[in-house]
Image 1 (cartoon, rainbow, N blue to C red):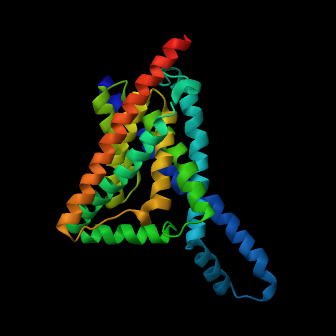
Image 2: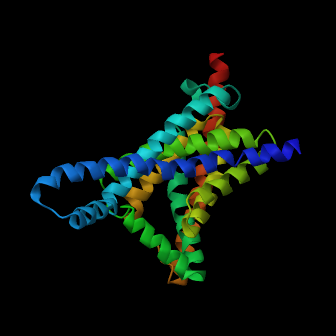
Image 3: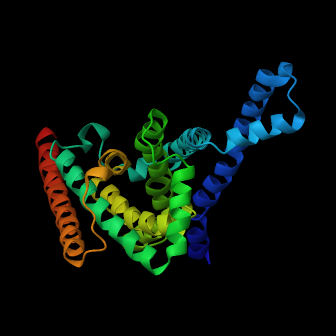
Amino acid sequence: MKRFGRILFCFVPLLLVIALQNLAGIPLCGITAIVTFLQNYRTGISPEELLQKITSLWTTSAFTLTLSAFYAVSALIIFGVWYAKKLKNTEEEIPLRHAFHPLMLPAMALLAVGLQYVTTYVMSFVGALRPDWMSDYETLIESAGFTDVSFLLVLYSCIIAPISEELIFRGVTLGYAKKCLPIAGAVCLQGVLFGVFHMNMIQGIYAAFLGLFLGYLKEEGGTVAISMAFHACFNICGVFLNGFLFYEPDQPFFFLLWLTVGVLLTFAGIFLFQHSLVLRDRKMEGIS
């Protein structure tokens, strides 16, 4: 029963962050409503028109991105303190100043591009089976402002979200999961919870798949900073390079070709990452 209770506790970070997502909108909606009222109350605007203007503002992609960034910063602070106070001493096996080796950057670049291909084809396969899921996903991405590159999108997607989400799932969640499960089970659990966190079937499936690699990078690298760096690299590829990658899901030959390219790049990234860890550890041994 004690172990079962510990497993259940691994769900607490997910439930907390979902609650935080919903609560974060309250002050932001209140502030925008007050600002809109102050800007328009002297114009003779009717209450109905004012309400329509406020609700229209709340549905814009800019507001959605601002809300996401606001929530992510709040989560970063809360889970950053939680991780630092309760788990950092046992989870951070490698000092940050020694965590990275120069070869890790090309390794992460290869792995990020490879996983962009693999996850995209996973999404395409699932979307072919369930077009309604894909339609819901595309609507969500468009309404959230993820289709147009903007400063706010880059700030949120490439900097704030990777840090906060890694603290939540590869930091706190994985740290507690390892106390009650074998490493493989703990990594799988946090990956599944990372998928559930996205609250969308298509996004959840590829996020769970990605979460497994992020858990692997954190455990192999010995610090959550490495999974943060890769998460940022993956999102940067998604924001800036997605239009330059080749996808041909409707043509069997090219489908297999680019899927093979993605798998090979993924394995090449893993191999180079493992090699960089060997070189890093040798360097640390020489310093000590």
